[in-house]
Length: 558
Image (cartoon, rainbow, N blue to C red):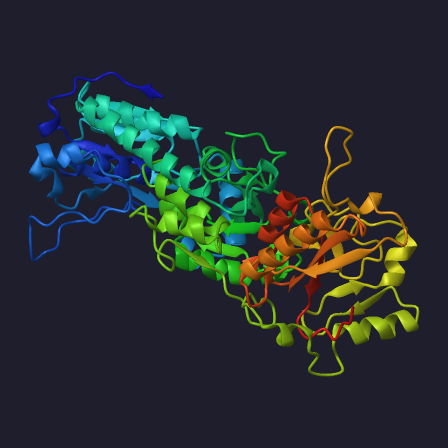
């Protein structure tokens, strides 16, 4: 952070010019909105309802309660002057057009934003809050210094330049602004409240009955821009990896650095569990619109096929290094743990998670592209016509073809013949893998053919296991197969089988659990239990688990 020296008066008489939406948010959170005399054309500055001049502001982030309690007038303010102008209208341009305009401006050394000289002179600020972190986001720091020296009396105005790169540094700006404005205790309270909120979000994700290991954390791809794609930089990696209970899908990009342009192939290779589209400067409605427009680019992703593409208000909750990042963290967790009832209950109990449809939303493509409903067993296994993919695959193999076209999605699908030409499992969970998905690491989330999700306990000389692992079962052994749906009846049956084995040493049989699940939702029909939950049950019981994914109306037989 940098600043120019100037004498600052008592905060009650202080005149603040905020040249960033984030610093405007911070001033409001600190209870200094009545001191703000100038803002940008992009700032959100809520005013009291006209019918009641004493009505409180409507906030979308954490507020310093001590400020309002000690100064009731803090909730009353008039509209500040608009101090900036923009040379581009994002609402009338595509993402590609905006990207070109930004890159051209940077190349030519020109700014997309300028100060309104007359408005600055009229505002007569004592302190100006600005930044030099991003040349795209605001008026250039050099222009601010020049205009202050030309338009304002000498030594009247302090210029405070903020450059937070990490989430920790963002919260430090709360304290620095509060110190500069003469209310240091409010800055400390705001920072403390922010971290308390972030901690509550992280603790909520630990309530998950599905995710128990670091490797099982949802792999989240955050897109700050779509055309071309950019990952989230600066404080976004901290939000994803340290506080939302997720892993970042762009782990090869260094944390707390500027966002990086990605190739779509890099995104496909990353294979994220979910994608959150929260483009810089765009609200939820615009991000939903651009996510729908990017359908063909997103289509190859597993996250697309599983209905895990989300849009969020990138302008309010992610792009601004301010107090609303707390809500942004909660949005990331809500999207990542969508369907995990325990986590969702905790997050919605926070009291400040933005509502679905207001701060975030699932991006809904047509039903032919994504179907995430929970189907009955008969719906899963019944083929309605001759164009089921099982029949198309059988026909393609009979003709010696490497691929066929899926009638539902239009994708080209490798046949078993193509896979055998490769000679090994590629590890991607392919639909017609003839190698039992042996190289797939996350089988519960990827397999499309029957495979052992768990082969049983590892062999150990020190431990005795009631049931043997698959590799250690001798040929021609007596094996009992028990259908396991994860419910109470299944556990009662297992208990009976265990008792039988312990009482009958004459028949040393082996046991394998068998389950079926919807290949689209990864949920067991009727029980509404995720396949990952049943996998964890089998691992705890130390009994091998064979899982059969059922593809809707595929016409497949097993």
